[in-house]
Image (cartoon, rainbow, N blue to C red):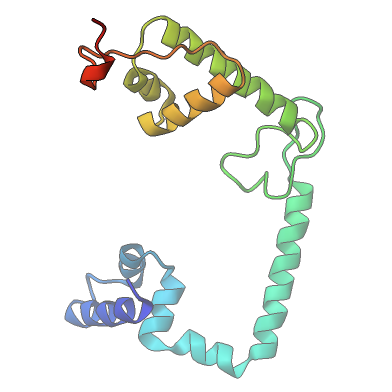
Length: 173
């Protein structure tokens, strides 16, 4: 939905029932912050920003510097080597699994372990759909992964289950 449409609808809803359509509720509905909704409906924040561009820039610089400092002091530690993780590892809900030096080796181990599980399940007679369900993937993605794994030499034999040949000339006499 375009921004202009969101603003118009938010204004209409707020006008209909201001007690129900609070800035917070409108923000949740349109996926924006309460400050943005306030700015859309009243224009006060925008007017202040327009009147004080130097102060806005100064505040942003201070906020960004404080954020960088916090990130430097609160980085997660790599479980393999104990080294510092990348920027953002402290504020993310799911930090990267390893530091930049350890990540490629750890990732290769994970890919190999997953490939071995796929080979085991395929050898045990599970279908593509069942394996994809266990991995949380789509069948299409699993098919592409099968192709990559076969290229790397993993034992994933093809399973053709044809009850009859596709073309008459393929029939064995």
